[in-house]
Amino acid sequence: MADHIPFVTGDEVARLVKSVYADSDFVRVPLDRAERLLGALLPVKAKLWLDPCVDGMDDLKTRRTEPTRRNQWFDFMAGLVGLDNLERVGSPSYHANPVMAEVSAFVVAVMDKCSCHKPSWITVPQIPLVNDSGRNKINRALAKATGKWKSSSGFSGRLILPLVFTNQKQINGKTARNVKLEQAERCYHESQADGLWVVDKSLTDDSGSPTLRNKRFPGVIALHEEINERIASKIRIAGPYWGLNLALWARGLVDHPAIGIGSGYQLFLAGGHTKQASPKVALQSLRRRVGVGPQFKLWLEGVVAGLAPSHPAHAEIGGIIKNYDVLSQASNARQQVARSYKQWFDTIASAPKAGRAIALFQDLSAAFAFGRSLPALPNDEGTARRPEAIAEPLMLNCL
Image 1 (cartoon, rainbow, N blue to C red):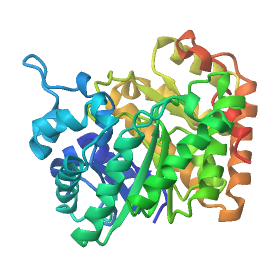
Image 2 (spheres, rainbow, N blue to C red):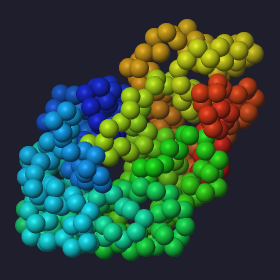
Image 3 (cartoon, helix red, strand yellow):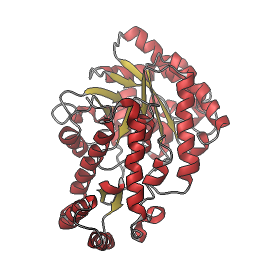
Image 4 (cartoon, helix red, strand yellow):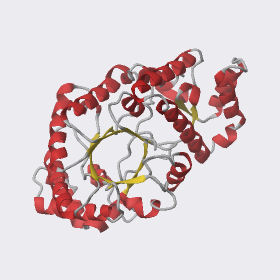
């Protein structure tokens, strides 16, 4: 079974997981959608990691159901734990002085619902991290209540403590990291967790931003190195990202890269309102995605005209041009990206474990070299206009 962990967010993603990622050892499913997603849509052999979706309490006021706008996550959570308890535990004013009995009632309701689905893993209820210590007490209370629930419930699976960072300031500097890791270590032990899932939800690692290479990627890598020194976790997960999760996995800093499926290569918190992403297609030879549009098709035609038929990328790019109208449809584009990403993962996974970092470096070096030989992409790609802009910072941080 493969190490990657697909993050299943809806019916289409579930179908893609079943057809493209059926060798996944685990799949992560949000509790509020579990009833619909479990069963025939998911791989039969995959074990279940169930997430109680407490991260949606990061900003409860924007998720409240209103007469003119329903929020499925909010309605689910209110029905599960009670509207008054949800509003109380989700209130920032409550976080500095949580009442343990109320927090315990909240945790028991959530965890009992999770355990009904017989998952192998459950995420420890936690609210995403903020720059200051304002959520330390509520998160410790949630961790303690989870540890007590585990002891009394007889749950035989594993608990995964989430560290959901929300701002690069929490990661880039060692002083800021130390403060967060002290809190994580306490919550890990108090919750009786068996594993850690770490993600920076603000990180779009295929944006081409100039800060990725020397600031953001080194900060995340240092974070994982320091976590591994402090916490002897049995299960280590990172992502979803586009490529940094693969670099952390190839370097042996984590055991499982969490992945998006055709889109969504970053974490979106439960209950949030996300914009419908424009279709993107994957260019395997560049290890990146590019937005679909008329200018991109012209770019592809110019590139393939300059390649010898024997060039490894000639057939790939020619195939995209031939099927451009089909790939311009969002569902087809997502499927193409999902299959391309799977091929990328399998290429690196085929190397011996000790050689994966070198294999990824060589893979990204080839993508970088090819990208350097090509003209800039359309203006819609912004800071990622240079074809090698995605491969380069990853290449420089995967060893």
